[in-house]
Length: 316
Image 1 (cartoon, rainbow, N blue to C red):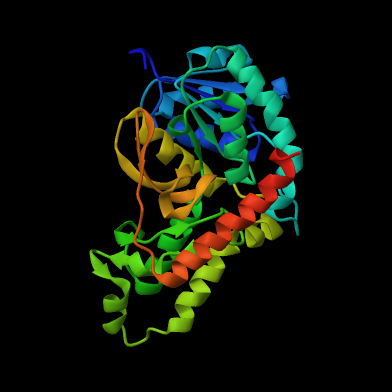
Image 2 (cartoon, rainbow, N blue to C red; image 1 turned 90 degrees about the horizontal axis):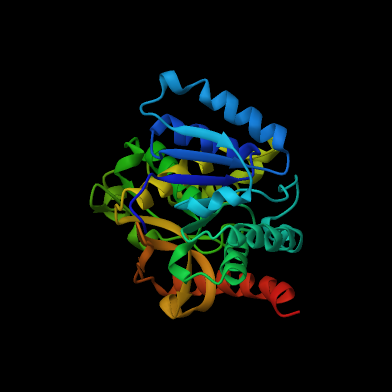
């Protein structure tokens, strides 16, 4: 990419988009931030509000509201727009209406001459990431979905709480669909380099059922939050900022995002949550974990559920 100021364009200034913008400003990661929304007054109001916080920010950020033409000079376009998940509704229930919305959004973005990296953060994220890839014609490496980045964070947090260890020293992944068929990779979970199975031997209060409940709480977290406050946005906003930082600072960080598989994990032609190495070019590579038989079976099931749902939209 060209050597110039770093610009991020946010499409959609709802709960997730505005929370992401706020977190991005607080961490001083980008030079320019443009907010784009059909509700121009909301986008303008957010830009005004964020600008008023600049005296307290770690670095200068130019923030404004604009139109799709502003995407032409962006390094990253983050799409958070789309219909929200309602109480009792699964992420996959949203597929048809959001796929239709995204076709129009991507068309507008591409008309601007955008040649950066897409980040997709609306549900069902794996399918919408596939849609953005199809509609844009971009290389698979430059289209990234938020995938299971938040699920993995929830997993690490709850394991850290359970074992009374800083969550940043817990390394464990949730992979698969960002939704009901996701799975924990227990076989590769560790704390400070010690496998979870070894760690539990030194914990007299450990109960296997507790770990099973931890995963259930991770999988169902969005439902519980939606019941209480109507939507989830702070956690995913922080995850998106982490992903943005990995890209703009060329970190080669390993993050569980929705990536295109072309044979990895025995799957093809699908975007799904897996550990990947992320840098300035997008996804450098997919990290293929050596899953045990049970994990392989669950991952294959998760992929099949996504493919069945995608078929109803992309095979018409």
